Image (tube, rainbow, N blue to C red; front, side, top):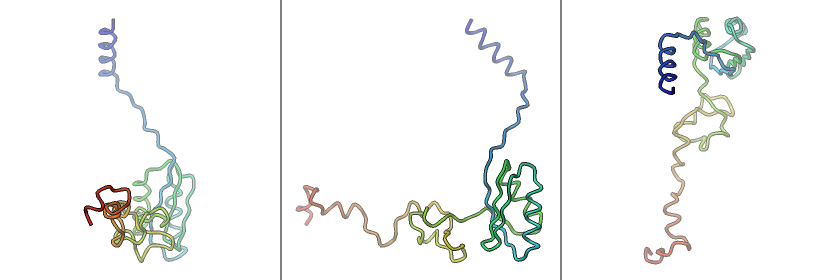
Length: 151
């Protein structure tokens, strides 16, 4: 009976087309938008808040950041903001206390708001240029039985 069950499942899956919609997840989208005045701030906020699925919109003009939370897709929010005539990009910064080496070459950015550094995967992998290597430190330790032969 197992063969008949698997055959009937295969045939039913082949002929049955499901129209399931993907359910959007609740998420927070951070976008960097250049805003100069109250009118710019109002225009961006009204454009985003009129989208379907948006729960809240927070605009911080001082650091040029728009935070949108709701059942939205980040690309659609970005496109909606760009339709207002403002230059927009996904938020490229993370808080500096999250990054292991905030002053490394790839992460430090003078244009970043205070308390933030540029998001970079290289900064997490590369040590500081002047930091000693672990191999050299363990080479001359007391726990290494061959340390006297090296010297």
